[in-house]
Amino acid sequence: MPRVYATPEQLAAWTGKPAPADAERLLARASEDVDSALIRAVYLTDDAGMPTNPTVIVAFRDAVCAQVEYQLATGSDGTGAADRWDSVSIGPVAMSGRKDGPQTPGEVDLAPRAHRALRRAGLLPGVIW
Image (cartoon, rainbow, N blue to C red; front, side, top):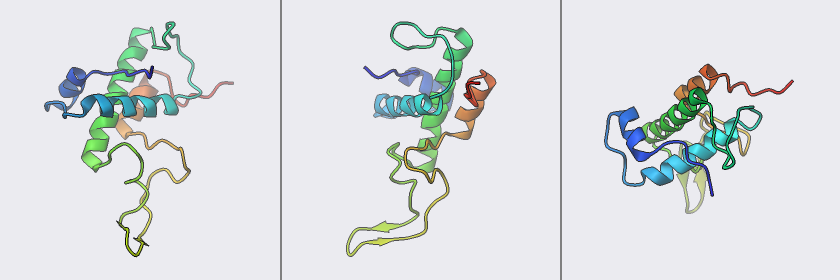
């Protein structure tokens, strides 16, 4: 079962707005983004893989809420498809200039506020020496 680090109620508190109808899906995708950004980070977890340190728990929650807030503000659906091109047509296929953001497939477009929350908790840059 995927780990989700924030609730719709926490998202509403973070944004100051009611959680969107698909908040659980958005939070799950944002949690996956945070997991991907922290692939090399070291922190204590329980048997389910959830962080146990209170500072790290708060950082994960804040990062996930910031990620959803960022995606909603940029019009992203969390799939990454909207992040690739600034204009796309289907017939007879026309694509326009690439957008800024991750250029390597699989790279995470992590929200700046999410990055800062994880960095403050000592989880980034996530390099193991």
